Length: 281
Image (cartoon, rainbow, N blue to C red; front, side, top):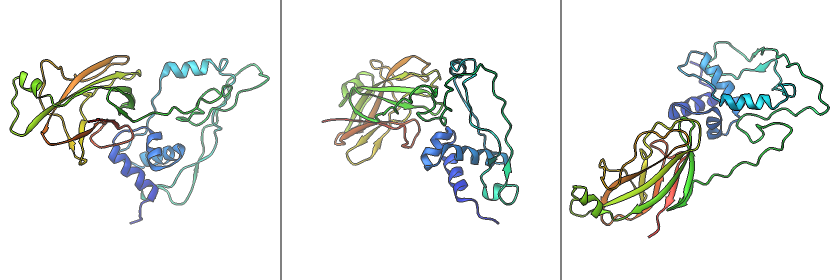
């Protein structure tokens, strides 16, 4: 049996872990060029593996970008022609390096321009803009803050979210018992209030506090308790584009436990979209 290509093996292992992700995110996690990652994934998909490589866009935004290029006349796409197909270890059906001829593109008819635009840059980079305009500097996104801070992250579906840690009530035993619940000896309740704003055109279809946890001084995590307080409504599933939804999350933990952080993630494990708020004494 031929050993798998090491790069393909890393790609497949990461895809199996993430399940669903954009190509540029996969490439960033592995330190690869997005174009190489895309070419390898397409080759692996064509070899029969249960892998689908797709593309998603804002149709109106794409149409507007094309319309702004003077009836398509100034657009210069990526040169087509032969391009290399990356070897994919045992998944490759052929032997030895080979090339697949790409389709020849036909330029859009247009009036001659004295100063044609430059080619657009690679997708998912700051150069992905009109060539006659300076590239915008990359936006610095903070993943850490304090109580009251609003931090930004992206969902698995691609929705751009802004999440604010509004309040941490610690202890919140009076709220817990007022709702009819009882704490065991040596336990205390904590209530965390968060608000999530969907700043994209993609719906967020998950529970906003699904993976909202407390982090203790010893590094342990405390997950939310399966209770809801009448005086502090809990989160509801889903936030539509342009909407803001708030909710309260309840935790039950030992009295002596010191909480140092509130952490939000889009999945059960920590990743590039994980947000952390520091809780001061």
